[in-house]
Length: 343
Image (tube, rainbow, N blue to C red; front, side, top):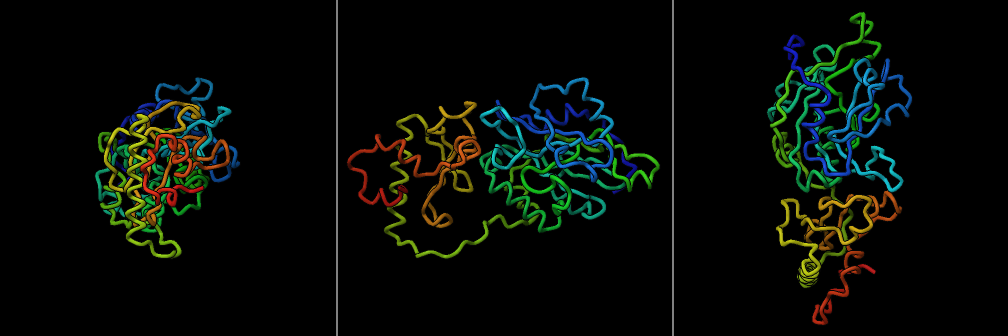
């Protein structure tokens, strides 16, 4: 991949707005500017500042981004109850892109181009970051699925190995197509910092997590867990009956609209604990259909702070959902149902 490719004029504002076009109201990305050599930066410098569509960087800070090392997160997050907006996996909301690092040096261009890239940013001489923007769906809002994709990409040699600050997991950072690469080795090589630039930008190219995994031949199955007592057919059928009863109750409460499960086995619902959320949105909550993959236990996930445990320190479970809708259950509910409603 040649370092002489033509520069594409893309402002930081446009790059961010195109990437986070589907960001949920009240949620944010994180951007940060590191002066000098980022390898010498203090850990606190990587904390950054929140950004969301329409938010402008104060004029007093713009030069830090234009003259420093400018970064952005690949994911969006929700604020904590006290208003603090960190980039932590505990307050993860959704992953909006994957970034293939070191294209042209450590990763061959033909490997990175299994899918046409949404953006290609030259971050040092002949070295690029390839971006694949993600189509929002439940998989992109599932922290385990999003993190698993990144882990599988790392294992396949397709992205950073986690040695650099902030480069691993759903909280990882990539470079904005502005500013400089101020690492000392490039100053010694070039006599000045390397000017970061965008050489390809096609934000209309968006992919699901499943499509990305398939294109790169990645196995997205979870790591096997310790074996437990085999579930009998009767227990599995009881779990499905109980789950259908729960969906019916949620439907009666206008928390479930009858939509089908996603390919990964999740059904999106409105959160029964929505009144506790710091921001009211209709996304980020789902039930897992009981299946062999989850040992017929089903599951519940909500990425808002009060439910994920980021605020209270306790993650809400499917048992909590059962309890809040218990008053809706008919006396004819199968006797086996309490077996699938954790105490």
